[in-house]
Length: 88
View 1 (cartoon, one colour):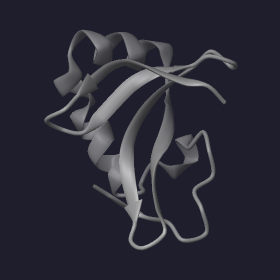
View 2 (tube, rainbow, N blue to C red; view 1 turned 180 degrees about the vertical axis):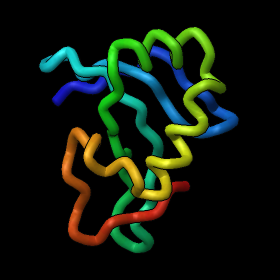
View 3 (cartoon, one colour; view 1 turned 45 degrees about the vertical axis):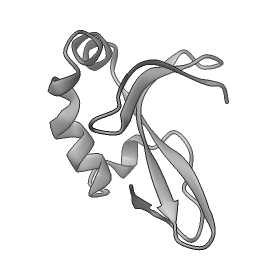
View 4 (tube, rainbow, N blue to C red; view 1 turned 90 degrees about the vertical axis):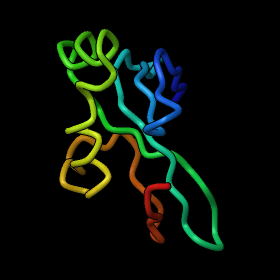
């Protein structure tokens, strides 16, 4: 998979982008698994969400919160490791 960030928020630590092989849009954020590795979790977003979020990054904050709380795991583009980290 080849994830390319289009927009990002340094303040809220997340990115909006496209997975170039599939053409799917995503929202992602960094995760740390203490003592193991740091990685990003990628959640699929719709075309409409992509357009909305890239125009107004703050409009993504509610979905970002749900993803960080693992309430949107059905959207994950990549399965997390066995030792799942916490958002940083």
